[in-house]
Structure formats: C-alpha cells, structure tokens
Image 1 (cartoon, rainbow, N blue to C red):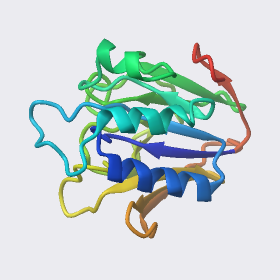
Image 2: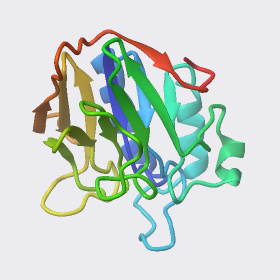
Image 3: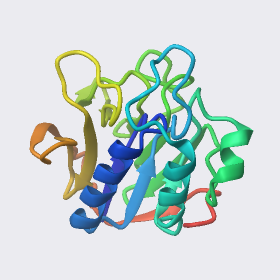
Image 4: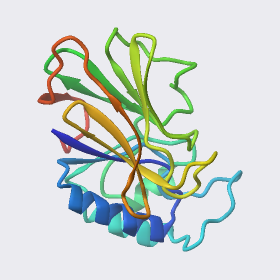
Length: 200
C-alpha cells in the first residue's frame, strides 16, 4: 500500500498543483490531507497564488482518493466548497497487524498530547510545518511538513508511505529530505481501513 501525504496547503494554488503532480506520479492509492486545506489562517501571511476556490475545485477532482482531517484553520464554510469530508478531527487506518495510523492535524493531538495509542502505532500529523519521521518512545511520529509555509531550515514538502518507510520529499523537485523506517513486530504494508470516511 502506498499513501501520499499533504499538509497545510493554506489555499495556495501553486503548491496544490505541484503536490497533485507528485501524487499522480507516485501512483499512491490514497491522498491524505492532514488539515489546513483552504484558509491561510489569521497568523499566516496570505500565500502567493492564494486561491481557495481554485484549490477546492482541483482537489474535488481527486475526491475518491482523498482521506482528510480538519485543521485549526478549516471551517464549515470551507467544507461547503469541498466534495469530500474534512471536518473530522481524526481518522484511523488500521494495519493487518493491529497497529494504527492515527491521522490528525496536530492542534489537538500531537507528540506532546498523544491520543490513545498502543505500542507500535503511528501518529501522522501536520500543523507544526516541521517534517519528522522517527520513533519517539514506543510510537512512530510522522509529519510531512507544509507545502506552503515551511518552517525551520526545511523547504516546502510532502510525504509518502510505502514498504514500511515514511519519507518526506521536497515539493520542488521531489528529492527526499528525510525518511524513517517503520517496522513493528510483523507489521506488513497491507492494511484494511477502519474509519467513517465514505471513500474507504
């Protein structure tokens, strides 16, 4: 199974177009949006090529592939433009091993405020705009960074999961920035989905 992660688009049309090109090339089965999809947010500047209506229209073309969660900048008004649900604070992908990929934005659940996880579960979130792919104690933490407002010394980025490896790649160029090996006991890359998301 291959998953493609985008977080913190914040309505940037240029970043959305570039990320979707990488998604198509990746041949990933699902496009996971980890929140802050359309709105730039009151603490961020308005991004270059800010066009939330066009971003929504582009993403709607991929609605059968998208699994999305709500970010702190997402609202019911944003949901009105989108043809896939974004208002859930989290959703869970359940691996055959029983381990979970817990998908959330990061403003409610994060490394400092963990949800209920078992040893070996994966917390996938955005919000901080800082990529991460590493074991922290008995949990694996994955953050694909931000496509629009990267922080620290890292460029704009997206994420991939395939073959028990989580990767963060540059939005411009696709080169790998960092990666982390996820393997817990006999975890396999095949999975079944446990979620209320209608696309699953």
